[in-house]
Length: 298
Image (cartoon, rainbow, N blue to C red; front, side, top):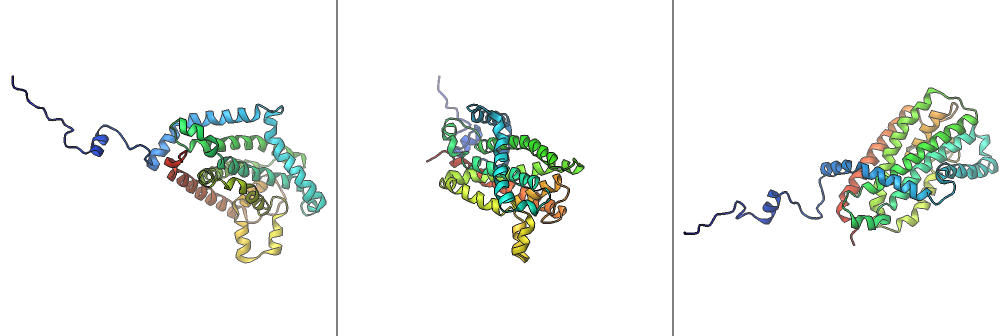
């Protein structure tokens, strides 16, 4: 019987067209932003499990365990109170200086912790990155999730301090919920930005303590915000008062303290907080996504 050749349906197709027809994609390609976001959402259980594992491993070797989550900001607040409250006389400029100071320290440390852990999210997990395939944003997000959980615990301690120092419970305390949401979005974006930047410029981890200390002094954590008006005016004062951490700290003080002088009206502060959260959150996510295919290489 005469043999007849049967033409394949794939005959004449280029390799690129053939791969597309069979559902294959290029290795190491950058996924589209919607595709990347869907994949990240699919890994939400991995993110939560990784965050829980980090909490367990970080506190498992200490005798006090989770107590350190609230002891650290309280010790910092105590040190700052002795220096700025007693030695430098800051307690005379503020009716409830202890609560004023503690709010600033607790809120500032929330962002500081996310920056520090975010900068190490990629470089500290290279073995995991090179062994498994998953969206790399899972790592800075899980690190930020740990700090969000820690801050929620610290908030209850902070509210206790505020009550002990004589402040009453008011409906304004409910404003802590949207404030926590906005600052968490801001911190997530900042953590994602630092994760990529820290993986490219590893020396930045040595500079973070100095950057955060400068940011601390520029955020009215340790002294009344009105002192900025004594030395600055015009656009310079407006730039300083638009500092995102100062905005978040001022809103926390507005929520928890009755008699407090704010840098701006609450409406202005809430507007600035919303803008900062959206801008930093979206920009940080986009910046990290653009570098997705390069993490763990080289």
